[in-house]
Image (cartoon, rainbow, N blue to C red; front, side):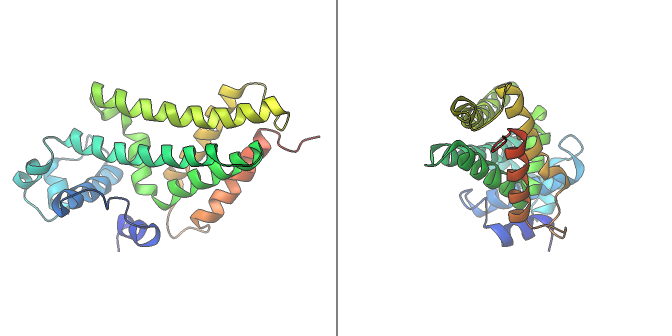
Length: 209
């Protein structure tokens, strides 16, 4: 079973809303190829071959390789935004919301590490319009986490003199999970999420005297 198949088996099919089936197969194949070879080294022939299709069949569903990357990036970043939005809107203290946000954000990056690696590290390959759209989603996600940290700083729960810088550091820590996580590693996605939530709480000085 390949990496993407293990992710789907363990965490649900993140591409379930992509239709028809041939388009979904191409998305999965593109994720695997981009993660393994990088966007620029991957050809449409590589993607079609992994999907068990001819190169000509790919263009029925996606006009370009970049359009495939845009589709993948959009789905991944919308999911990240939803995760962060749910945590930001939840009841509880700033520390509780921050822990939940980091735990679920990290868990998703671990469970879907192949996809996350593509959407985080191949972003620059998008065309200008698509890049602007995806970076706008990223900024919305960033603002949600920043607001949680700002709430904690304002209430005295956190010691975070530089909220923007602390937000950037926390997000960088979280997304980097996709770079090193493997399904056969020592920790599960849940365990990594709990670990990183604790690290970020210490980063903001939650509970410090």
